Length: 449
Image (cartoon, rainbow, N blue to C red; front, side, top):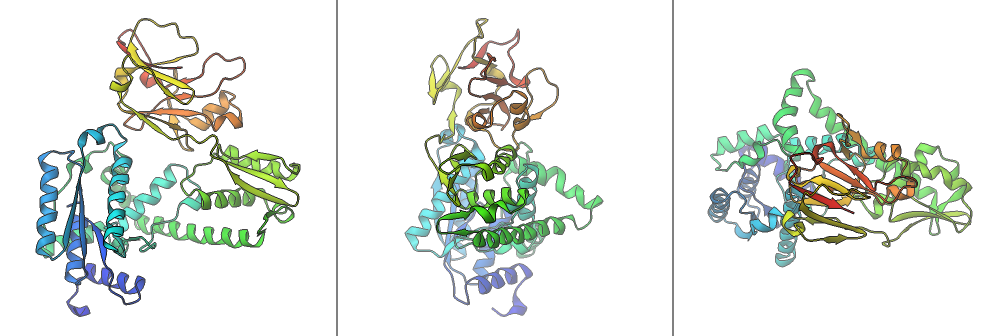
């Protein structure tokens, strides 16, 4: 198809393929939900004669509406000459998880299995420029450092995102002009998840006050990559096969030392979150004796080895998040590490060193996980919120014990309680949120001890 016959959307896809695949014709697993973005991607690949397999996950969360999504994708895939692969998920399984994260894991596992099965070149996704902006914003709002502000790539060796140069409005116009059918998931119009809130209530209004703000946010992502490249350049020059050269590292400014340590740990564990307080422990390295170490997280430490520092990893204190349903806890004790949780009828309990929360005020299921930088809660007796990092400092939890602190998070991603190791001269083993405190109306409570 000649350039003059292509729409701007189709041309953007063609340019991305030519740029990333050196003129060869790739074969994709195409993620198609049935929404306007993914249906437009499928149609544009059809117009460009790019073959692939349309892959759809039916979570069966919306009953008949979910089935109609799958039917539309299957119908159009056949009409446009694509193979179709469907994965159906039991909605009961979805109910006991943090749905968004669980659903993401399910579909990417499905797509990757198809890549292996069909020897595909990669997974084609309909992420567009507005998704890019929202992704960077969420990282900023959650307190992630500059190294984490980077944007998504058009092609990262596995995921192909040819729409990153076009906006949601352009895609919607393309679908209208070409008569592309699609379905709207009405749950995306609800604001109970962070991305939906940004998309539905926040981002569009910003244009009235800050024209061109989206382009400015995208430039933040670009600058983040420059920052990452600079850290990589410095790390290469102060390291050798034995580790980080002590003399050269000690000569760096403290802020750069912290940035380099974070950069090197993220190479090993990209999604790790490290508190600023723990990163500041890097300043202790200069006086560290040979053979001694400082802990940066529960997994990572830095060891002094004569004239080098070595970042070491241990799985000894690793903790995997646990998701617990109310039914699994009612009148039954569940052990998670050193903690025991149960849901019981309220009988005016003797508090002791246990934590009690009103079970009916909690959105179930709950997740028990390590706390992360940016987590916030409303401590018992407070009207406002406080960061977990600040609260732990106020409670005089040591830096070592901070890494062992767990949070109880509701399905709505609200922190209901913190659980931490014993604190000298303090009876309580944690803090509950004002939002889930027991009162005269409490009938059932969640207890942890």
